[in-house]
Amino acid sequence: MTYSYLGKTMRYCGQLAMILGATALFGCEGEVVEAGEADDTSDDSGAESSGDTTEQTTTQVLDPDPSCATEDAETRANYDTWLGSENDFEDGDVSLLGRTFQGYIEGGADITLQIETDGSALFFAGDLVERPVTDKDKGYLCGAAESQEEKDMLCYAAPLESVPYVIRGASLSNQRLVVPLHETTPYDPWCAAQTPVLIDATDNECAYGLYPNTTMGWGAVCTIGEEVVDCGWMQTTGWTGPAPINPPCRCTSFACFAQIYPDAEIELDARVSDTPGEITGSVVVSGAATPVYLFEVNE
Image (cartoon, rainbow, N blue to C red; front, side, top):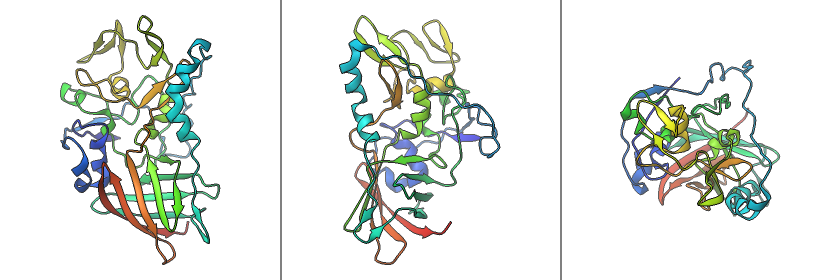
């Protein structure tokens, strides 16, 4: 499986081009630059088959440091708020529960909004593909960097197509449907498999991350201190040499999880039509809106 890389942009805006098309980038800083392809480093061979028996990486949860309880709670606050955000897909006589909608983003990819009867929901572009985290020490949804040019690209430029976005905090009111989408949520399983590392005990004994504050090597070989690490893994952490970006994960003293910001980076803002089974509206990214069309399908 190969993934196309995009140019470096502010936050994760560059990857959105693969779904939303060029019109969605007007509100983003930076431009999309094609930079070749690279093989996926995660061991997901056979993952698309329902018969895949590869053992999945388990969540790493340590014993919390009692002295870091306050800092841990502050670090997890946005994530816990997101976890506790319920979806509301009912508005009077209108209910979207148990319904699936498929359609497209104008100038972009085919998309699916899948809503279960219990209110849980997924959003994805293209065909959904299972990609279990099989090795926490390898990159996830990333490619193997085979050249310095590729190493300078964002790991997050791996296509969003076929990657599920768990929906939390969606609302339906007066036929207006608002669905917030956080770009880092597909990385949550990978983050959960990581082991929290104390960043710098001399600076803050309760500051944890994916790697310590030490000398980092980014080139033909990737290193943290004296340890050689997988370059795809380092890309996924968000550390890319002289210009690191906001990482997809945050860590407490006992666990790592997706980095959730107070405001979702992507939002589906649409209207449930009087005509049964139609949803029309926009996908909004940094204030730039791209039309979206969804139609109910019977599975």
